[in-house]
Image (cartoon, rainbow, N blue to C red; front, side, top):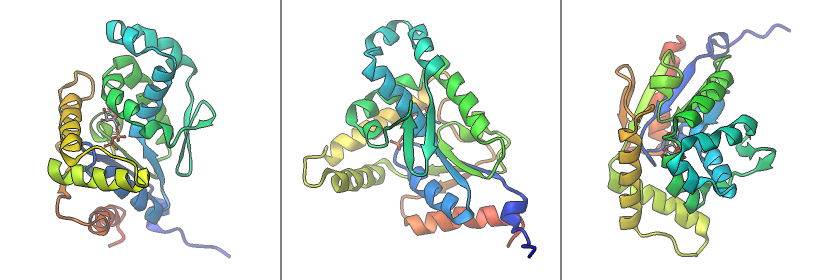
Length: 236
Ligand code: CDP
């Protein structure tokens, strides 16, 4: 029996979703990829994996003085995804990369040129067949400036702190989590660090569709992006 290919399969595209911390990128990207039958690539998880490895090897202090110390680590590192799981050098690090210490250091590690060069190469390789949803800070500007659909998600910092608080509280199962004020301060600091760095700073590509999710539900934001994809592949 011959099955007609859907427009999504005939013309696989790249959906690039960028935006600041806790703006809803990963949740939107994951659900959208699922709906489209696309592969989801969480580039933040890749930067977090490099950070975890650098922490485990005790490199952080030296790297602040001389970033070339990360070369050896980058030569041998392997980072991959198995469904929702993040695999670093063969080990499942999905939970470990969300720990506080990693969150505190990840903006520093991701400001290093050698790290960005390595991950750019890996990410471009992962997307070469298209049919992916990739989220991060520089996907539309640096990794895939030719992505057929670029989205820039924003939300106000207080709302983002609330979302992060709910997420952490659910995971903590009753254990203490940082206050809303602490989370908002941390989010604002990370936004500043990501926007002000020299290499691939967080910024909106002029073609990216700006979506403010402050007052949107997850379903609403997924639907908006899904409709845009359908328009591009000519299915609406
Ligand atoms: O915590 P949240 O989910 O918002 O962030 P993430 O997507 O896990 O990314 C963590 C950090 O990695 C960001 O704050 C950036 O410093 C860095 N990152 C980056 O520089 N470029 C990317 N494409 C993705 C993440």
